[in-house]
Length: 170
Image (cartoon, rainbow, N blue to C red; front, top):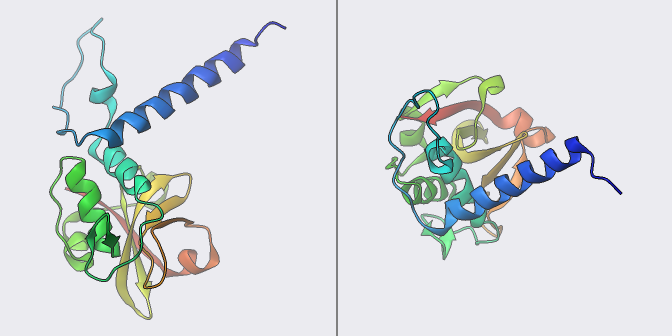
């Protein structure tokens, strides 16, 4: 059977994506220097990867780690500890608490979300929860005591109602 050209392109695109995500979490990398390629210059994968992409990959690697109030290490995370850990491993310093993260991020419209953007939620009437956007309306977060770091959907009834805004760390 002869491979369809579209199938081959999708296969290689998927392979490149998987390889780039695997490489992102293996070593904390310094943020790439902002650089505009000149005509004919090849841009490497590392130059195309943003700090948000790297932070999202690190956060995703923590799925299954138990929730721990005040936790900011792979032995246990609370929501803002997961964000700080993920961004630190991605080479970017961000504040520790949810309120500080809110203040240190530029608002982003829901239609402009990118991997690594922070999602802020109101729980029991106050802004008190943050997660890291992964793409395709999914995010990773450390939900609450007795649970583990997990992936959730912005489209779920609970999070759709609790969502306040997104922010991009600056």
